[in-house]
Image (tube, rainbow, N blue to C red; front, side, top):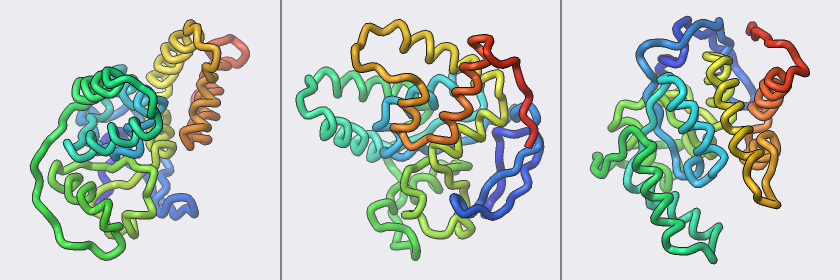
Length: 230
């Protein structure tokens, strides 16, 4: 499996993990001048919480670029409509426009592929698209559907793992994003709004939620700024 973590300037040492067959142990350094090319699956893009964190971090620092296909956009819109049956047409149209504006690349055409052992047939188009755009990594909630990560030519991350990697790569960037996120959501009048950590737990990012809580404590003055060594 290719090990090309462009998020990090220093190399990573890899060990086995029950959660992910390839878990990074990072020697912290500044992020590379060459951004990681990251393909994003529809099950990630259909989450408002995950979109916000990925897109804002992307804008804050050029650690990575985000890529998808028209197929993925269509799946995202379909899943969003299913979750928001009473939403207006403009709600879906606006989301589509935001996705095209926020992603670095959305491509329509890529080669077809025969079945690949270990990869779910319904995710074969994602696997093929990742290879087509020469992405370094795929972010998906369904890592189990892509077989053995050691057999892939790209990194395989859950959103939780990827956001933790970004935090390890540049904690100050993530603290700045945390501040902007917190200011935005705290100033909203929504009666049902959630805290940042509650939203992240709801998006299956428990480990990153802990890190965001640490950043919030630093920002509030409860905890002094820290440097993480791993």
